[in-house]
Structures are given as structure tokens and as C-alpha cells.
Amino acid sequence: MIIVPIAQHIFRRIADSTTSPLSRTARREVRVERPENVLHIDAIALAPEIFEEDSEADADRVAIEGSTEPQATPHKHPMVKVEPSTDRIAHRELKIRIWSEGHPDNHHAGKTVTWTMAPLFVRPVAEGEEAAVAVFRGDWAQAAVVHRDRFETPAEFTATGFTRLSQEQATTTVDDTGHTAIRINLPPVAFNAARISVQLEGEAAAVELIDLEVPGIIVIDPGHGGVGNEAGSSANNATSHTSRVLEKELTLDFGLRTRTALRALRVGENQNLRVHLTRPGDENKSGEERAFVGRNKGADILLSIHFNGANTVARGTETLVRPRATNVNFDEDTALAQRVNDAAYNAILAHDTGARNRGIKSERDLAVLSDKSLGNTTVYHPLRAALLEVEFIDNESVDRLLSIDEGYEQVRQDICDAVAGALLEDLRMNQ
Image (cartoon, rainbow, N blue to C red; front, side):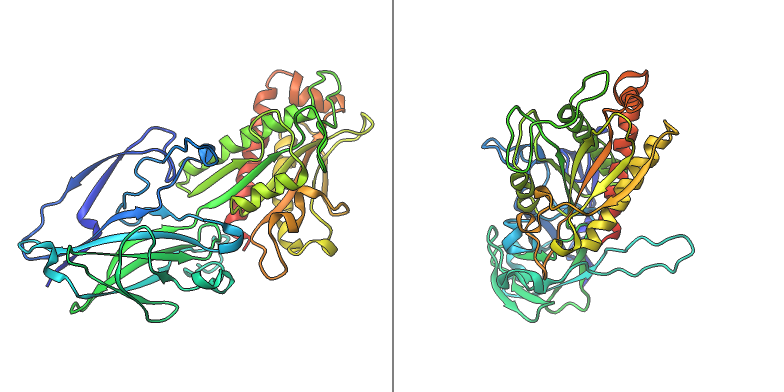
């Protein structure tokens, strides 16, 4: 018997410039003519639905249109993290239909479907290096005990006859309507991806059905804010030399710009990215509360953005991480910090030859970078964190560069674009 997988549907995506794998998308479905008496295996639904980043905490959450509608490979459907600090897994549920033209949907009722997956993530390599092979990122053994298998019984869809064959494989049974479903688990590391295949009892070959990918999750923390001090976070520290622009105003502006730059990369490079801010407006949060945002969102990276102030003479870009003695993933944090610091410094240098690279500092136990608050432990530390001090804004030259001289808006955007690129590189390389 001939088997026709999900590719029997051709999807034409109609989208504007803001479209991404996680954005609202309009689609027109074109159905290909199918011969009679041919077996068809269709992915027909995904769960749970996915919500826009900016509305996740609101009672009136906005669902992303089409997030429950499977598309043909190689489109990578985003997975979700629920209770990331305790579940330690990313998942998605998938419902499929198995049927034949000329037969009722129950023609294959009672048959066994075997589920398997293959890795899709390929680590980028430098020019001249040997091409990398596809691998899984992370380790299922780090997940909560109930989620350590690649497949498990779904909660939102009905599945009959679920049987665990091994950590790698499971089977379900086609029900009386020709449907079956499963829950798929992947370690919650950015861009970890898998192609899901099914094989129907009595058929010689498996069918590649759908691609799933763990989104990269970044939390941007604009430092300071509001009018009152909080534990580990003052309302404002530095003030610009001449313009008198406050540090808290600059950090929010840079945070918003960096979020916009990351979302542009999401579209331009077709990346599964989700970007959150610890504060979208003029409010202050404690250092611990800021770290909690990273933990609760299941972030891969938290970057706190600040500006220095000293004696009106000092200059330079530096990035802070917690000291090795109190940092369970010091090397990973340092690699992140180095990428971000170099990116910001080089962007400033392109506009001002007075730029200075002050490097990576690790002398302070900053609350926003606390592993305990971030949810990191010695055996499980998914979240990298660093604090970027962009420049000394009480220096007159810096103030002119960032807030006064013609073209300062472009300077700000260039810095944020560079930082966004460094964050994306870290998601791909560091883990």
C-alpha cells in the first residue's frame, strides 16, 4: 500500500513583515488530489495553543493564530515549557488521522502506531571545520521523573492503547474514528529539535510526520525603574552628563530596542525565539523578582542592561557575572558575557574611537544574577545570566554619543542590534 504523509497538504503562508514561526499568520490551504485506496497519515492538531509573549501573564491572553495547526516539514513547530523549573522539559501534544480514500475512517481501528524521533539540531561550525551531525541538546534524565521518556500519554487529546516500549519509543492504537495522539518531550534547551515519525502496523516503512523545536527564550532586564528602591535594585543610579537623561530611561529604551532587534532576527532568520522584558514600563522590581522572571519563563538567557556613572572621566563597556565561588555555571555565564560585551563595544567603536573595552568583571554577588533565584543548581543550570554596563553616561562624550548629537538614535539601535546578534549566537553555541 502507498503511504502519503503530511506533505499531501501544501500550505501557502501569507504574512506581513512581522510574521515569524511564533507570530500571527494567515494561511491558505491547497489540497493536492489524492488517488483512491491510498493510505494517508495526517497531522491534524497540536496542543496546547501558544500565546503572544506580551500577553502571557494577562487574563485576556492572545493566542497566536494557527499555533495548533500542523504544517508540512521542514517547518519547525515550537514546543512549550510548563512549570519549567520543576518539569524541566519542553513538550507538545500531537493528534493524527490515519485513513484511506474509499474506506471509512475506522478502517484502521485497532492497529498499532509506533512513534519515534530523530534529532535535527546541528551546531554551527566555523568555516573550514568538518560539518557537524544532528544531535539532541540536553538530557531527558534531568526532567521530572514523569517526563523522562520521549513520548507519554497526552492530556489534551485522547489516546488509546499507549504503551511505553523504551525511553525512545512508544505505541498507541488507532481509535474507532481513525485517530490517535501522543505527547512529545524534548530537553528544554534552545533550538533542540526533532522530526517525529510514525509506522502503522502492517506497513513496511515509517512516515516522517512533523518537526518540533524548543524555542530559544531570552529575558531582557532593563535595570532600575520607578521612584522607590527595591532590594537589590535602586530606582536610578547614573545620570547623563549634559542631557540629564536618567539611567533607568536609557535601560528601558535599550531593552525595548533589543527586544525589537531579536524579533527582527526571529523573522529574518526564521528562528523560534521568544523574548520577554522584566519591566515594560517605568517600574522597579527587586533583583530577586527580576531573576524570577527568567526562571518562570524557562529562559535560556537573562541579560540585565545598565549604564555606569563615576567621575565624569571614566569610559568603557564592561559586563558582569557572579564570582566563580557563587556561580554554578560560571564558564557558561562568562562565555555569554564575552559575546555581549564584545558586541556592544564594537558597535560603539564603530561610531566613536574613544570607546574602551573594560572586559568581564566577576567581583560582585548581584541579586539579579543569583543562581538560586534563577533556578540553577549544580546539577541543572539551564539559565545563563550576565549584566551589561553599556557605557559611562556621566562622561560628556558618551552623553553626546547616546543622547545629544545628530544620529544618536542610530547609535543606540546599532548597539542593540549587535547585542541581539550576540544573544542569538549564544543560544546556538553555548550548551
